[in-house]
Image 1 (cartoon, rainbow, N blue to C red):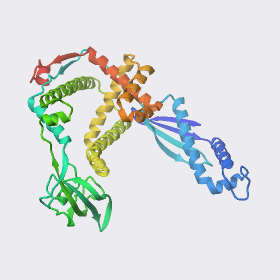
Image 2: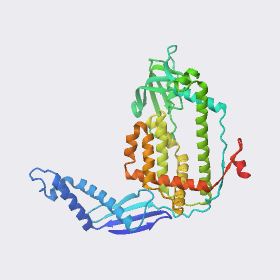
Image 3: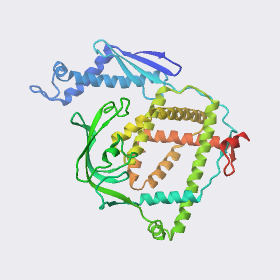
Length: 438
């Protein structure tokens, strides 16, 4: 094995590995030997098929499997030999795959920047005063009311209005052919631009129950959904039933249905929950403000591959949130992609924060024991309810336990920095800017 390491930038490395034919032949012979024991060819007893015949029938598959195995195995060996630890799994580029000559490939990756974090102790950070008003409580009660709403069939009109829920068939067609993901039968839609993409709410508004409607919509060339960008889509819809949201009355009876003695007790509980939430949010803002100060005092280059990974994670999280709120899968991912610019900025900050906190943890010798990890997992399993088995299985994998251990270590490092910070409690109505200026 011949290895060459090239520094293409301050953090990026290109590791080139070349294997000689003798090493490759050994692996090929091994692969064909394993295949010979399992394959059955007409005219030959099991385990006695000649390799030339195996090469003719299975050569492409065997070579592909051998290349994948050699690349994986020798990438790990080369990284270990060169004492290199990629921040994110390397990008593999195969440069020579004629196994009669050689196997040459490159692994391109970023390494962790070497950081010595300074000025992270005794920082002044304001903590906002927690204020919960009567209007906040009323708004929270209204949200509870909306969660307990029911759908009631509309009997006194046949035309769809904005805000309705409709049971309908929908088909988006381009040149007379249905587009993938844009056809639905007997699906319930909320007629709102907040929940329906592509202007489908405008297609449905004004439609009459039982009567098919066809409307054409033109989409700009820079439209996020590339499949229909710059094109005209013909929408076909048939509304079968119309429903309106029926909201319960907030009174003592409603409170009793929620498990409280009366509306007064429900209000008290709601306010208590809002206070707890506001205090958590205030604490999180203090932690983020502290991290922002540390970031400001410690500029450094962040590996691009790490930013890419965090951006993919953020896009997946946003898409999952949208899907959970009822947005169809394709639309949810399209909307997440539309926010790529903002998510890129957040991804860069998240990656930068993670690297800084890891460096602080190293400088402060912060550790997390196996017992700490096991205790955290046990608590999550207990709190998972019906998902206990799934959570236990998820953290049964060592990779997941290692990720959790790293996260817990960062928590401890941030707590350490918080304990050494100067937290300045603000008076009610005082802004963070005025508190800092003082």
